[in-house]
Image 1 (cartoon, rainbow over the protein chains, first blue to last red):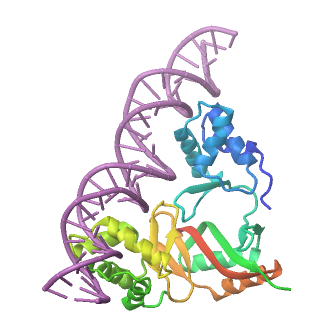
Image 2 (cartoon, each protein chain N blue to C red):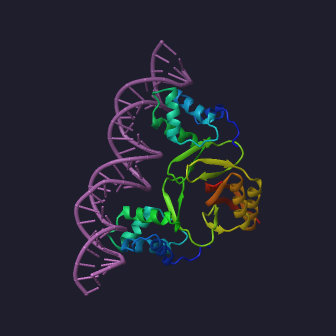
Image 3 (cartoon, chains in turn brown, orange, cyan, green):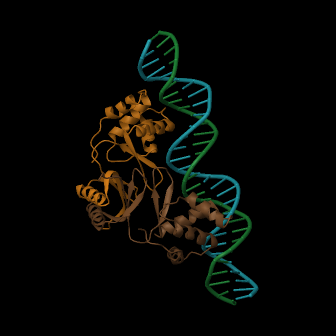
Length: 142
Length: 142
DNA sequence: TATGCAAATGCAAACTATTTGCAATAAGAA
DNA sequence: TTCTTATTGCAAATAGTTTGCATTTGCATA
């Protein structure tokens, strides 16, 4: 499971970058930390942020997300729908198994797969920065 | 690597869909079939198509790609750069390594990883229907 | 605690990738 | 060859994201 992330880690990422801790940034970070297992996109985050402070603007959301991403504090995913979705980058890496019938998302980890991936990348002359593995499957009949 | 695909398969996908085989479509399909190991985006395809017939328009490229995708003849990938990239959908399964600096996409295959994935799914009580593995990395310094 | 200045904000407008409306054109069945 | 309708090219629309700029605000310093 994704480890519960307290917003302090994200705030520290900003501080380490020499950035100011502003009110909009605090709100955005709180939203990222509070997310359940979802992968919100910029608009999701913006809508939630506006509920806490109606003055927050979408560009600020994007700017904050970009900053956090550049400092490795959150991760950006691209799905086929064209939007970018974000999730905190802390905790041990995990992958996803998606139940094609129910849509349930099961997180899992495999040290072996992680190692194999690094090996493959090394053979190709690369160093992995991050990866994404999604399995789509159905429950086996008993 | 993706098996060499003759354009007839793609043309048939259109015919099966009851679509007309027009000059622009022939050119676009030829480009898809001829691509090397690249994963061209719509603009790449458009630029090459224009070289063969300067009247071809970008919307036609998009419309043709969408049609081929809907009929499973090509596959659309979304990487973090925001653009969609396409490749013929035939051939053995392979995964992708994305060069974070250049955006280059390298295909690879690993029987071991495929097996590990199935094993993991089985342990979780699932059967894999398909999967997606993307490695994001940087060239290792020499 | 008050002050000053650079960093961050909000707004509007720009940009990029992709899609759509519509009149003109062309595929292909008859 | 003719006719019908799918497809095209153009221009304009849309969606997601980024940027320029004047104003505001965090926070280091006094």
